[in-house]
Amino acid sequence: MSIDEYDVVVAGAGTAGCYAAATIANEGLDVVIVERKDAEEAGHIACGDALKGADAFPEAIPKDRLEPAFTNTGVDHGRFEIPQEDTVLEIPVPGELAVIDRWEYGRRIIAGAEDAGVEFHYDTVINDVVQTGDGRVTGLRAKRGGDPVTYEADLVIDGAGSLSLLQDKADFEGTTFDTNVRYSQFCSAYREIVEVPEPVEWDDALVFKATDRAAGYLWYFPRTSTEINAGLGFQMNEEPMQLVEALKRDLRDRPEFEGAEVTDKLGAALPTRRPYDSAVAPGYMAVGDAAGHVNPTTGGGIAGAAYAGKYAGEQAVKAVSDGDVSEENLWRYNTRVMDHFGGRYAGLDVYNVLATAVDVDDLMGLLAALPGEKLAEALYEGSTSMSFGLKLKAAVKSFGYWGTIRNFYQTKSLADELLDHYGSYPTSPAAMANWTGERDAIMDRIYETTGADAKY
Image: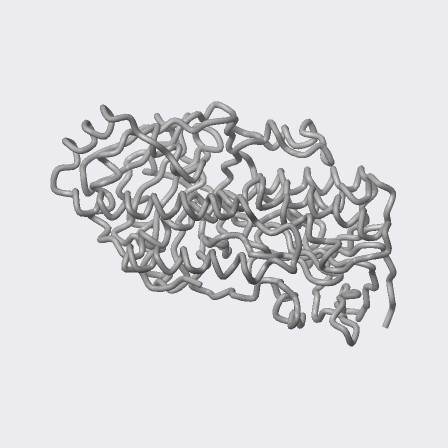
């Protein structure tokens, strides 16, 4: 068995892993990314291909390296189709928005990380996590091209995606690392790349459509006016084939897809939950999907992953330089994630909890009654407010759904309270138990108000 030694070993060549590794390599440390796919397939993952906020991405991988993967920069709004109400909502999306070729994007971030000095080991399947007797993670065991190899490192960064194998193998007892992870907190996603004969009329929009269950939705994102990413997301506790059939049936029923050709099919899992309470343990950090760094209402995870990678990379450099990879010395990574987007994502997750307890027809009726710009705020910011005039207008439009609206506003008040609580996220692991206890008390009130089953 060979032994490879590095300052940092990163599992997974996705967005979070590449940004973390590039950040570390830019500071002169030795870092390797181990990736189970071969060099050709690396970066080829199931994704909706919508990218928001690329104008403010971290500089570890320059944006101009990514831009060739941006196939449609003309999208500027969401189009929500609600057939139950015979309604289409056109909702503005704040900030820069683009649809990308995700495989090309994957190649581009890998090339950017290589430019920074990151080493890549492809065809490498991780089998185990190496830990000392006191629980500090010191490396990984894997097979590279079928041959056993051990990676020894001061620090391991887990960018291995949703339901990461590394977290099944590692022993986190005695740490704050979040192990409250269940399949029901994750979504299965399936997408096809579809070539249509004629340009679609909605090539400037991200199209969403509800299924007949609140646990699933369809999307149509135009890479170009004739190349469409058509997909479906649904909670893992739902029957997958029944919901995939909903996508296929909708494709058959849409006239713009008549004569279309499917060029690629992929599926994946993604978190539809709040970010991990803590994503650090001695010698170990989790980033991106492996730490729940995904907007739980839209499934968008690229921007969060990029910044999680930056923050983890910067903290890794400090910890390795200090010779101290303790939980305490890695903690600032947690606080930066929570300050930037983690608290907001936790607030948004409250609406996922509400959706599990609301009749889908009532939910669609409510959405159809709300002003589009306020829906955009709720989807992307975690909170929104309405003037008296807008409230009155919505109330008139939503006659018959007032019970649902009352439930929604009670839930919104609790979501705002939760968001405020995340603003006081602890500055050290010693304060974590008290903070989580207070947070869980707010969640208990959310479950009571919504009537939803406990999610965590």
